[in-house]
Amino acid sequence: MDRITTDQLTRMLVGTGTPTGPLYRRLSEGLAELIDRGELPPGAVLPPERALAVALTMSRTTVVAAYQELQAGGLVERRRGSGTRVRTHARHTVSSRELAGDHAASQFLDGPPATIDFMTAALPSLGIVADVAASLTRDDYLQLTTTHHGYHLKGLPSLRERIASWYGGSDDILITAGAQQALELVGRGCLQPGDRVIVEDPTYRGALDAFARTGSRLCTVALDSAGLDVDALEKLLVTEAPRLVYVQASGHNPTGVVMTADRRRRLTRLLDRYDFILVDDTSLAGTAFAPTPSTLGTHERLLTIGSLSKVFWGGLRLGWIRGAPQTVARLAQVRGISDLGSSLVAQEVARRLFDHYEDAVAERRTTLPVQLRTLTGLLQQHLPDCTWQEPAAGASLWVRLPHGTATQWSQLAQRYGVALLPGAVFGSSDDHTRIPFTLPVETLRAGIERLSRVATEVVGYPTDAARVNP
Ligand SMILES: Cc1ncc(COP(=O)(O)O)c(C=O)c1O
Image (tube, rainbow, N blue to C red; front, side, top):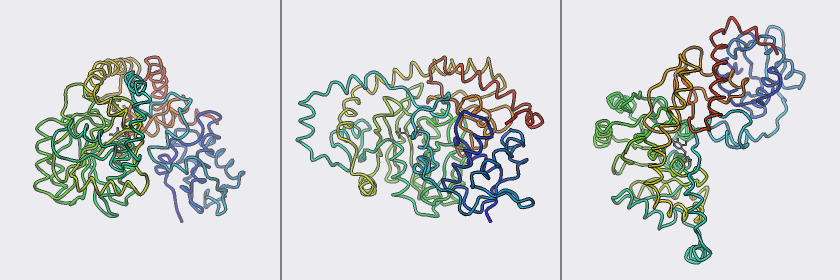
């Protein structure tokens, strides 16, 4: 018998249901969604009403009403003494979420949500993307379509050369559909079920998804304002013998930390003493507020992942893996199983955009710190008990919440029309959330003002929970 704990269920519920309507209905819809997706399997016993009410900061009557709604819909059965259980023949319809799976990508499936979206930390496109795309003439397309058969597993040769020479050195380049596909390929190509993978605490959730799906076991290493704790990593290399270590040395999502030169040196030296694959995800490198190296160098077991999403535009879906030629060749074969290469048109646009890379980075470096100051100003004004470490890169702030759990905050925030990610999603303790600062100022202000009301409710919780009626 599957007994679902309140803790498990509150995490599963994040992002489910509809953002409007009576609270009990939103909860019952969220639970129905989880049943539909099979995440709450037939026979699973749901948490007691009172415990779930406390965890979700809502009244017990709200939870009772939600359970009753599910019972009326034939999804659960309720027996005195044995609680609420998912029925064996609960309705099963395929939802878009089921098709997507419960991973980082789900948020992009249904288009922009109606609420203020603090979940996504995407950067707006730079104008140069449209300029360069519009500069392609019929002759350019003719050249592209007549010179190539169109299938380049590793990517458009001229773009790969451009990126390789941008780095310098002899490593090879595999063009991917964004850094996310790069992570997925590295997971599929380098990991076996049961392998150990070390990630920073916290880390990018899309990486957690990509690695967890290979059946590897993840363990975390601490991160501070200078980057990953290299001494702690070395101990783990000895005790855990990991197959792969995943870092973000040139700009870290979600904290915005940039690794110091000393730590970078000590980290890469470990490659000579221990047998592991080091994956450096440099997706945020172009958003660093000060000049930052965009690679840890070269080594036969170092893979550098890059992306144009943050510097130019996520819609290009253009990323890459830089690594030793034999590794790149193997990953290209893995890629060929699911797709035969990225669009050559997008790659040609990307190739031309590289001529503007330094200007684009300079533009990000000018705007991002200003937007960060706007957010920190709003936080100081409306949420003065929140704390954070000043980021050195990226488009979001990793904010420590003064009380309650971030899962409670995100549940309450949904009621105020703010979509918020709890820190647990980043594989970290649940006392942080990540707030993006690239939204328009008015949206940012409205979102932070709404969160200040959430703060008041979280302080009142749990004694005040009964105040919220269905
Ligand atoms: C650290 C990190 N890696 C990878 C990605 C995925 O980026 P892309 O849009 O290139 O797939 C992101 C996007 O937020 C990221 O922050």
